[in-house]
Image 1 (cartoon, chains in turn purple, blue, red, cyan):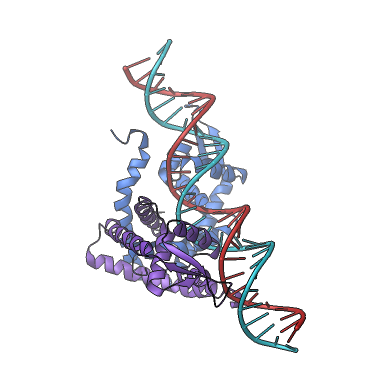
Image 2: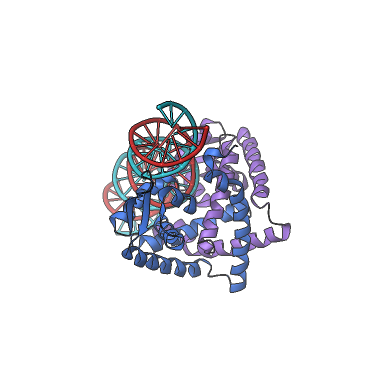
Length: 152
Length: 152
DNA sequence: AGCCTAACATTGGACGGGCTAACGTTAGAG
DNA sequence: CTCTAACGTTAGCCCGTCCAATGTTAGGCT
């Protein structure tokens, strides 16, 4: 059991996830909040649909998460005048600060997570994981993004 | 986002998990089934409590999972004559075959998961993950196992 | 103009893995 | 003989992921 790559990966991820969830949970946030704020700041305001594509968060989950962020005043939801189907999501000033706060916490957690590894090893691990991840994203990721026209 | 170790780890784990879940799901099994059968064959029959400690599966989840395995005739649940609090879990012959079936599937999936990596890189990844995992297991694992008397 | 398809936002639900809390039973130590 | 602790079970929560169905709006095709 303890040498199966899939086991190692998922179990280590459990710990990583717990660290992050605890770190964010301590200030009343969770992963989705961070992901969304990040994406909004990095790539600008967007409709919920495009936001979902950018972050990989399901549309149905976006609704609730944005409700939370909106309730706390971190994002604004305004109907797109050019296309009334869309809600344009923007980050407020408070959201900017919130993003910085969460980013700092998440950043600090990386160190805790990789504590037993030195800088070189960390880089190697990141590189290896990156390759595996990209490989599988290329198989299922884009397909999911273009879901409707996937088959063609 | 795409360089944070915790992100890489959890996202890659999502893919790994999906591969395993699909592979096992195709024959009506899931991760817990495999874990339990493995542990029972490797380390022998055990009570549910010790089984939980060995596999890291929560006692409350064990109940249902063992119900499933028992219903399919893969394990037997018999009260321990020496300690009537305990249920001794044993693997049936069908369970042995089932374990082999699941092991084969899981084994095959490792290749799919690590496809973009050569043998050397796979070994390195496994080694790095193993170290990180052990590090965190030593911090939270035993504490969880000894939960009741943890503080003392 | 009209229709029909597709994109959009939303709701309600499911699932798997991990967890907590509570309860009754049984062992075993004091 | 009592009191503590381990055991099994049930019920339920959380987070992240995903599916199905609904109603609305845009836009292409005819």
